[in-house]
Image 1 (cartoon, rainbow, N blue to C red):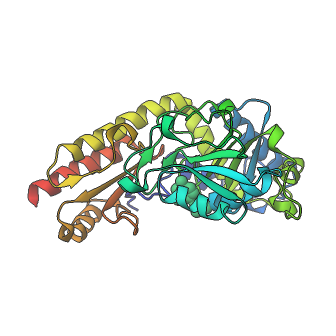
Image 2 (image 1 turned 90 degrees about the vertical axis):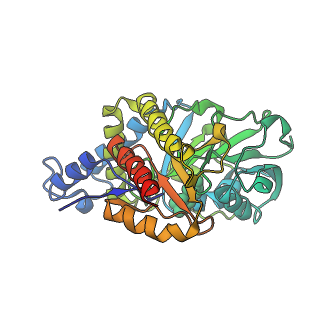
Length: 359
Ligand SMILES: Cc1ncc(COP(=O)(O)O)c(C=O)c1O
């Protein structure tokens, strides 16, 4: 067996030790006599897994007690609709900031439920910057302000929490949750799919402040109503049990790494190395304003498009996979989430330099 480095944007690289642990526990989970996949979600063994999952996430993100944590299905994409449905609470408007492809999707889906006020947009710069927060137009009658903390496709990341001028702040943190410390108390809702920094695809984490729960629009199906899911411990329907277990293992791994503050330092170093190599070259470039470059997703283009295919073929020959950029922007993208080891980034940097030297 020979493993390669996966720079996929999600589903993405897993900590290898976690894969090994899952392998070791596949047939029988800790004296239970069965695989996690074979357990009832209502039984005592799975209840332990579920409790630890929530308490580890609460510990890692220092989630205050007046927030509930849900583990749902449908991806962050489902939340694009479920957030307005659950928290408009009679209001008819919501503010959105458009910093890239994922903001756009959130905006599109919210439009089905309310009037969207575009507070700011970086579309004119092809999503290569974040508009100055002072210039955002915030409507105080809106139910909330939504932004995407890291744009997975465009490689743009907020470096601090924006001031929502008193509006409930909602953030899609799918691609940078747990990569840096965050003050949860500043938010009404934080949501994220698990397939980047928390393990496998199939679970959506929704962290929601108590006062926002219980106001779903009339006719909201119970599985989509936060209040119903809170009441049932995210088990109103059968949860994705094995995925919860895997997310739990990834969170334990993150604790072993020293937690979020420690992984942030590693993420800063990994991203700096990669951007340095790109900036120092004449073959590659990254268009994003330096201050808002993503630590998680590093898009770059080759100045001669004809080299794209040879670049990808040679990278794979060197054990570096999934570097093709998103189809909407082209070029390359290296996703270097928490689980990407330094050795993977080092190997990529070396390859990028070597390819430039030989082309
Ligand atoms: C920032 C962001 N938001 C939302 C999504 C959609 O997630 P899902 O496919 O799990 O619905 C993605 C997927 O890559 C993403 O990167």
